[in-house]
Length: 429
Image 1: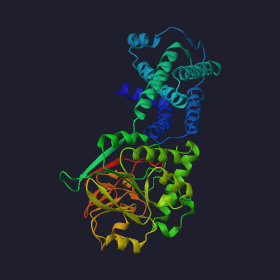
Image 2 (image 1 turned 180 degrees about the vertical axis):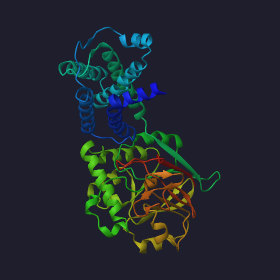
Image 3 (image 1 turned 90 degrees about the vertical axis):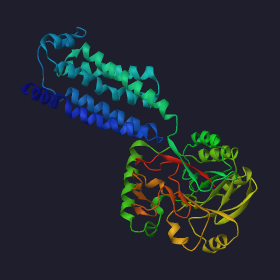
Image 4 (image 1 turned 45 degrees about the vertical axis):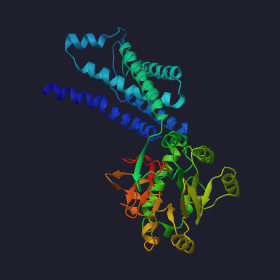
């Protein structure tokens, strides 16, 4: 027992603080990487510099000054010493020397995507570190350290390569709802909240599903002023919570760069989706200020854009009325649409409007987005949603009155979607 305590104390004095600190830094990098939020290389550079400086400081200037010969040039001496002297702490040191250098290979490769360059840069840092320990008499110039540190860099590069391959595929789920069954049931694919993120990865699922209709329930494009220009009363008692979330997001954006969003991404998706099935797109709160060229684009590519409007479509001999309720509600249009005869689908970006505006109306199918699934989900409960605040009622799934809420196809925040993957909704109607 005394021997175990001795080893724990040694680990604490030499490794625990730098190990925990450095692992915290690389955890941030892994978090950003696995979230699939495309960030500029600036963020990786920040983490890499901070990690290298931290490891250099802890490994060089926090140790006691040594005397005597500081050269250990016999390969694998630590293993022979550990076995002969039963000094198992040497083996623990070897493992930690590997682990501490995995983030270096990972970050270098994540930054430049070159295996050879990443290993050369990592090896250069190892030489710098070992030389500094000799110069300042804070450690040994140890061939075993070269071996273990180099192995750590190699493992980090390999991890980055593996994650890069995994990252090429979009992570999403397909939720299926049978609203109506039968041979004449239509297949409807529903998506929302693309927010100009790369979305081409969804096309494979749409192609395989073979929908009769693709409905996009708002926030496909970014056509509004930034959040700092929004009015305080729009946030219904959650103003301070929003301000805190924006501040956190702005800080992370400063360090890690802007997310990769372009109008061309959503436009390209719309063009390709139209080749699969007719596309109808209703206006959301991020499309407040559409440009004239947007309407030209919709017309040229036969995209039907609904802004407090409705159309009648005949699909496989079924006549269906489809309406799009905008963020700025036109109650006169809504009342007129609700009283039309026939099967009616209402596309309504804001799920909170369900109780606010639809209590006196009946529709065959109501579709929403906007809530992003509540961002963080614990079981079936979302944590937070714009327009509904904490513990929102409508975030994802099928609710009474054939009311379906999509959790969306992107993450506009650096705050992660936890237990809440992106979603394509598939409906038999």
